[in-house]
Image 1 (spheres, rainbow, N blue to C red):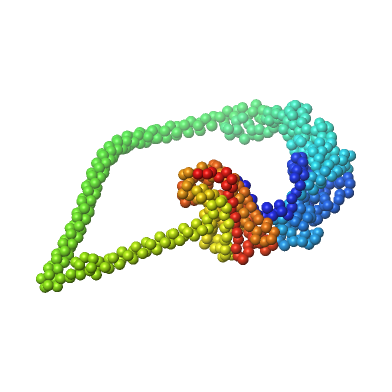
Image 2: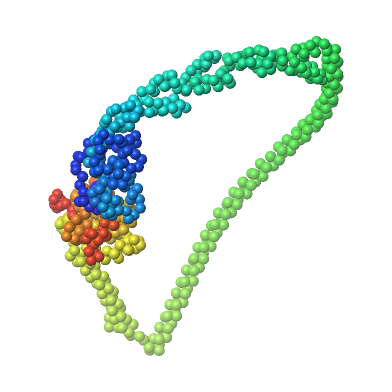
Length: 576
């Protein structure tokens, strides 16, 4: 279904761009490669550019040209920045600018993209000239365009034609092999690799013994280096000698007797320690046996406790079952008590009724005995009681007739305003008051009187939201079409397929009516057989902006009244 706003139709009346004025190539947006972030194009053009292709704000060549109602052209970004604040005027003629009266100037955009420009890399040596629209494609292949090296870590910019030489011979991040271990690394990291990582590079002994060894063998060399300091092999037995490896070897050869004495003393101390540990182990074993016997006793007690717990659980289950039985019996007793209470109340009422009847009979008997009968109670239609009853019946009948007369009068009013040719002219008075009620939420929408496609055709009405509905709430007038349940629906074809035209009538001399035409969607529930008084409304939530509707330039509102016209195509209306 086509939906359109009234402002769009007013734009079409003010400006109509030429059809097919933009080729398929120009319709595609230029990439970010040549489009400026803000303002017009800053390219160097081959010929001087006519002022008609320049923005009235930035005075550069138009980028995404926009044309205002006054006929002047602006860059899209310049105009958006200019209209960011209300009350702006056109810098060319000081006319007020309205953001809603702006149009895409596709014809101008095509002409601008056809202007000849120099390549951006002219200073670098490129002599080519091309249309502005082809500049981006040329820059993607221009040999004089500066591009960044593609290797990770390299941020150097080179000409595209020199990129291959840079990657092969000049880039600091190109892959090279270490001359020692043949590992591949970048040229920038090669020296650091050789100085700190390469396992095959030769390094000098840190103790300045004069030896050069591979980095992988350095750890083993440090332990065997002649200048390495170490302790005597019998340091664990008490020897405190420290020195280089050579002096330590000489010391071990010369101090065999002293080392044996140290070993002997250490052995005696160990034997004493072992005897002490054996005595402690015996004590621990006795204590362990005692603990084992205690554990066995506790296990027996635990088994007995678990058996008693099981017996308690069984007794608890039995008690719960007994309690449940007693609870059921208690409920039954309560139910019986309630029934007896009800029966007792019924008996009391019966007794009171019998007592009342007895008293009444007694009083009547006493009255008869005294000869004071009341013939007016038994005179039939001539007595006062029957007359009052008849008057009450007549009053009831009169009220029923008044309701039926009101319904008939309402039905006649609807029939007088109803049309049977598929057309509705809906007059809505007191627009300002009804608009305030819609804004406050008192009355959100209004329904028109019903109208028909023929005497035995579809029954329909219109529905309007003066303050908008859905996407148009608060900004637009929303207009909808409603299919209602009619008396001849079983004889009509469904779904409803007639073309519908919604129109807001201009009461001024210009007759700039705003219309929207749609063809019903056969799959929508809005156009199927109504199961209630009316189906869901379908139409235009953005039918017309409230600013255009209430603008005094147009005469959509006159004498606080608007007119809405609904036309249903009856050319293929089914005949019964």
